[in-house]
Length: 260
Image 1: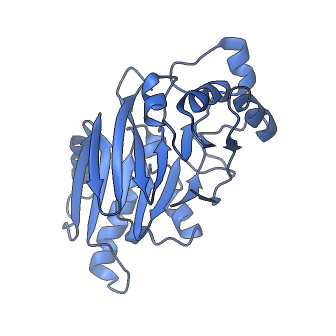
Image 2: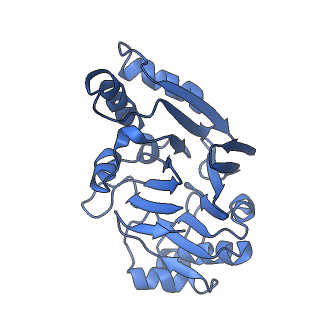
């Protein structure tokens, strides 16, 4: 498996980090996790044709994780009709939180009601679920993020490796359970170390110190951080994680590739 960091940032638009978006390549399958702002351009910068995606996972409905989804869908509809030279995957699987199917259909009607559906879309909703697809298995658990709706975290097993994506969440037992002995844990790290020391835990996001606790308890091998505001240096952030975790910690850059 290979992970490409398309966007490691937040909902705050800046030149350093795109919104949350991550490409996981498993054999001949391309899996995209969340579709934050800048996602299509980031895929192109990584040399990935956005029309070739096989699976898209949406952890929750905040704009910084969902905003580019319909742009990807619209471009795919156009490519299938007007750019036959493009390799458009014949079927797209969408994986999302409970209620995602209704949200997607509403967005489809609102944003492109006149466009014919010229490729297949299959939608799956997740809470505490397990599913098997060509080349990989999925496990999911709900994780606490906001009182308004539930977010979902995903675990992918393929090629004798495990990858876990937290989405956005606060400290909770479900992310620890899902991340047990994972090879790579991609986890949100919005709260700067000093802010956590001064104010304590936040109800919606994680601090590096908490990530270290989670990774230690889960016995994860490697941790990659995202949802970064860059309010602390990379060194300060890594040091805070390593207070509780002895494994590998990466503060990534956009466009970075990581082998799992």
